[in-house]
Image (cartoon, rainbow, N blue to C red; front, top):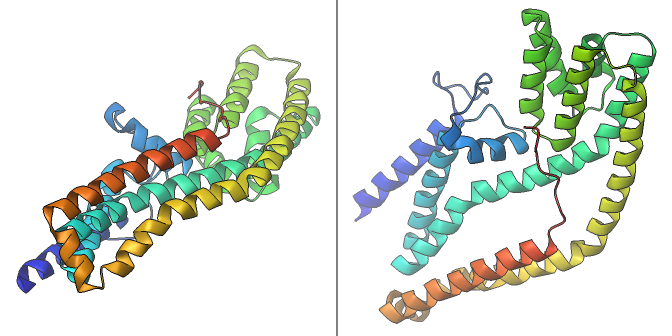
Length: 290
């Protein structure tokens, strides 16, 4: 039994290490590459969280590895397969939850930063700079949260000289609905020579500022309610971990009835959490131009 647990733990750690490194064993991110259509959902999740260089396969490997480690920890802690399954599923879902949280925080940062970016672009156009020069200049003058993406655009444009291809990579790198609109406006202005680009950008900047202000006010008001609901969802499972230290509870959960009760509780918790998230979710702008 001990050898089997050690083997499974080693496999889990190996899968996590493989998911976090590239082919040469380095922790540095891999270069940008397009994803096949079957992996588009996970690719968008990674891009929205600010990690477009990571592959969906490595995310799946990380989830599997953490699920194995969490299941082994639950088995060692409680000696109950039912508790081990619950902890393993929770550990396997943890990377997806972390990425979604990072994506939400990144989206909030981008919403606050885009009005400044658009103002800088409008100033550059008004000063007579070309569109590629104005966009590349944002690597130095833009908000800190967006400078790395515009720096990659500037580097890519210097190497390839293709404005269209560089805009496509910038849009995929940012993975943001507002970025899609701005990029398409720049593309249209480049193709047809629009003379109203400056006025369009200033109007868009004022609209985004007003939208960001209203959203921030609503999120502040609903923050306490959402956090209380999350605490209510997590509390029973923290109690389960504590009860797993008692032999009487372990014997109860190891029975067939206890396993059914745990599965039912997990299903109710999942449904309640999804309902809470759906009811409290603010509308997000879809990426219709992606």
